[in-house]
Image (cartoon, rainbow over all chains, first blue to last red; front, side, top):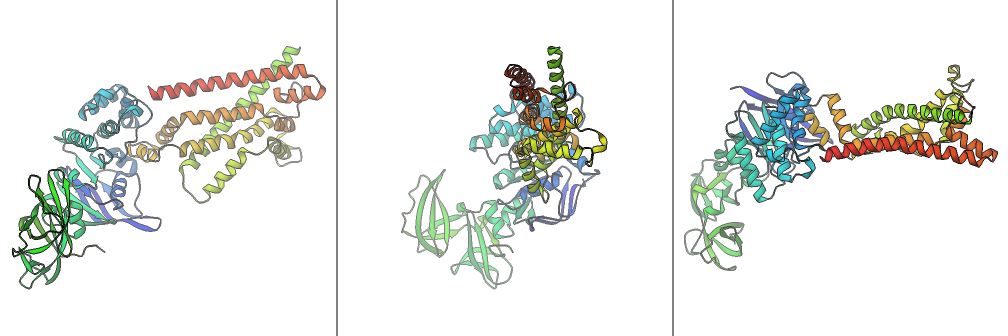
Length: 345
Length: 219
């Protein structure tokens, strides 16, 4: 499979400020690419540039086998974060891209019905778009994107504005709609959970620049920077020391990890589930419990070890009270070592 | 004889106002769409001129058009002073800023994501503009109604440019002014009623189209 979408030397400026810089990026045909980043990282701009809604200040974006912007727009489908539906019936909304492409009415009608059925929204076909809930509108927007069988689907945080239940339902319907679909999907989100199980490869954007591109598992196991570690959801990012032999020490105690590299300061990304509370006399770093919070399925215990760290206790146990001195031990298999500083420059 | 005169005045009123409204609609809706969508230097200044144009007294427009069409004026060779053509030009200048301003506001009031979404759906330039107009159809028809209302009811420019010549350029509004000037309030009131009736009929037609469009959108 070759590259379907290629970006070369792309620079995009707004009000004189660079908001997206991508030297080279190839999105393969059939690939599921997840784009992760905080608000303002340039995720939506990337999708808009790919979709041909905006043109980059400099650089090239090409879609294999296309000639011209209108041709590219007609071979891609872009769904914005807010489902922008026209003031007409749902059926007519879904037919609209086909109408733009000159598809005859009968073919439009059947294709729109099929697309709505594919996302579980056939029951709203005859309703007016204004009467839809946000979740229904997002499904209709997805059906409208799928109806013209695009080469690539560009999804801009489609579940961002939905509540927890509606989000889960929508993402399940999205998975079902794309389950046996060989098309390329570029899915943007600031939530790693939206992307991790749905991507072949993930690209992390921060302040308009690509920080890391990797398979989801690699991204979780080896975040390249502190920012990536925080974005993929690590509960703790703490400072530690690397010795001359590559051993990682936290507060002069070895944490059972080795990582070759220059001696000195490193950062450890640790899931809360990999942080165990032990006796303060154990050979581990120790600190004082500062807060205990009830969370879904567990207690979150905040400990000050000279820097804040979050540990988890099972819901059935009694967590240590604030002010209690505790030892903190890290589970090496749940810890990643990062050599880069907290903020990328 | 009287009926023939009234019918003649009604016909001229409708001809001038409808022609002017149609021309102003084409120019105003197009210009308003560009001003509502485009981002360029000087757009705000142009928008300010448009809004100012909405409030210019019609006699001032009539005066300017008369000076331009006057025999010794820049377009005097056309011979349009004291003709229906000259009156149409004046009414176009009266109605266009109104239609342009309302169209601009209507386009700007559309959801900001709509233009980009239409482009992303693969709309060509023509399909894009047409869809925007369909989405803004209710205020756009209101703009056309306002333009027609302004044109059919104005009297200052019609008098100055048309000259209120019997059986040639006399229209309902100038006829009312003439009758009142002579103290003939009866015919003036009758002309007023006819004018109101015409305005009602045309606006009823446009409102029906507008509301049908709105209902179709809801269905």
